[in-house]
Length: 151
Image (cartoon, rainbow, N blue to C red; front, top):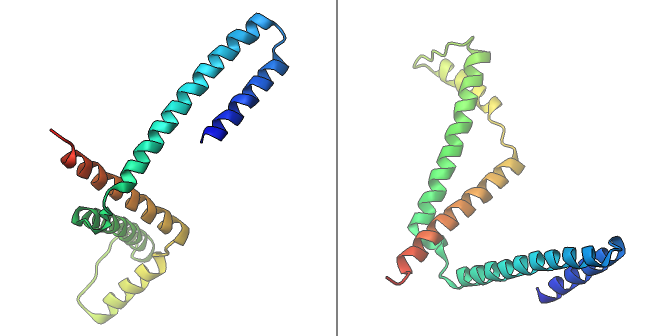
């Protein structure tokens, strides 16, 4: 981290020396740039410390709040997917009015129509799963940290 900061600082100094010929303007811009870079460097170090502290905590994936959050997110995604498929099926295969009798023919027709419409984009599904996991992880992690904080 320090070496990256040194390299960026060195690059900015060299770039400013190359671009700005007026010494006073160069010094003012350099001072502003160095102050900005130093502030970002301090924030990055603080964030790294927070991340390291988070990683020292117990694994929360065994926490029931985490698994509940993941289950709820998956159920919500499945509801949305099924709702979209039902709307498409109703509009296209049933002329806008869905009526299913309690017989094998109607049940098979509905199932076939839904199966043709539920196409899972694996890339989108994987992204959704990751986002759900991260949301649940940080939701539980934040509540866990709050409950452990000294009063």
